[in-house]
Length: 355
Ligand code: FES
Image 1 (cartoon, rainbow, N blue to C red):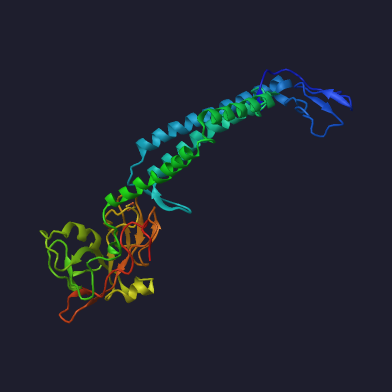
Image 2: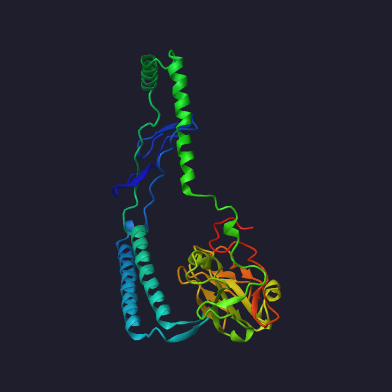
């Protein structure tokens, strides 16, 4: 291990070829290729021998710290001067908030120059002499090892572990069986979910009902750019399983111009650009609810996962691991929107095995 010590000149310039004592006292032998060569001779930096160079470095370090101070002042000034609504175009980032940009830049510059000043100070002016500090040997001595083994054997003899086979074998049996108590307690976790997590209340022919008005939806009820929440028909608010099942079956419906839909399956599963997706975020299950009609992006407010509803609801940002499941829909003979089956994959958090 090496560490910084006092700034003294300890260079060794005339080591004999056969054997020498290096700066840290290590013996260097020409016959032993594994001998500790010690530290290389210390090289003086220009700042160590030239006071004017040292002064220059000092001024450079001070300049860095002053630049950091100015950047901090700029940070505060930006905060006062810019409104959050002021948008500027910055290549290649595009349109960004001037406030965020200026705060980020000035704070970054302030931190950078503190780091640069500290590094330049350490490299040019602080002492750079290395000294070695030998570790004590890690391995135990043969005497200690022998003592440990003898204590261990003595303990085995005194416990009768080797002699009393009946005790030893029954103890192994007891230790092997005791974890089974924990396995039995797993039953208390409740019945197995079986395939309930893979299915929702949607099935072929179920009407899409507006979650707020409880009225079946027609295509003309879904204008372009709106976001509508729906549930399957036949779920009343006082239904015993309503809360549980609606959480799984909750649907969001948007209408997108068919030519804007990039995903072929999505287009096939839509009706004249009306697409229906699970409202349950595939990250940890929050309701996805913030829809931006220009981009067709929908945002989960919990951890900002963003899904592109014009491209199979794939994840374009955030921690969600899977696209939102799509429900295949059509229109029945009476002109109402209906499901053409259940979701083809489990809805909700993506830690469930998908399939
Ligand atoms: S629950 Fe939606 S991003 Fe975390």
